Amino acid sequence: MPEPGRAGRWRTGQQSRQRIIDAARERFMHCGYERATVRAIAADAGVDVAMVYYFFGSKEGLFTELALRGPEHPLHQLAELLDEGTEQIGNRLVRGFIEHWDAGVVYEPLVAVWRGAAVQPQVRNVLQDSLAGPVAERVSAEFGVSDAELRVELVASHLVGLAFARYQLKIEPLASAEIEDVVAWVGPTIHRYLADPNPIA
Image (cartoon, rainbow, N blue to C red; front, side, top):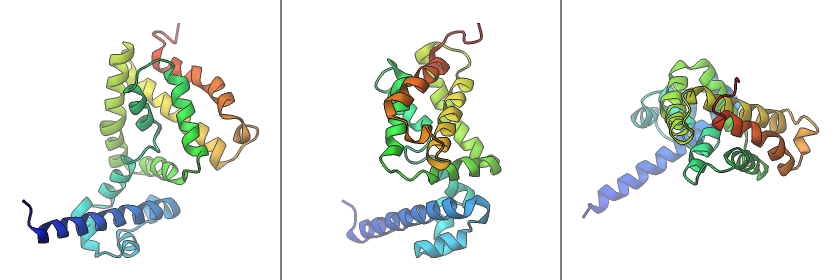
């Protein structure tokens, strides 16, 4: 049975950790990776700078934690949908992706991750090793394809581009198109990326 004092310290530590994550998300969203400092994140979270390093090791480690959390990245959603089966995977993925953003979820975290990975090789490598790589292995096994890494990157870039045009740039008529219309246009393409045995033929 854990000691009461130790349990209390653990809860306090987890609360501090979550405050750091929340503060970092805001800083990375509004300042970008390069201008967001550990000192500013710690101040926003109301913790000592040393605590950020204790939990995450570095700014890169903190950003990596953010990049791997939550459903913002389309490959997170793809992994969850594969758990439910492969039928109509393209349509299901596009529908879930659009419904997620149409529900009012803040779009900026995905942009922050995308931009941060562009300037931070470590973050890019972690996304590849911890997210794209494992999802590609599942796609290879499920659909029997040998170029799964290329396929999942095509899926991710297509959906991120769609989200950027619909929610960031608000390009019409895409920005106000009905979900099912977007699914009908984009879903078959996403499915082809994943399942077509020979798309070049």
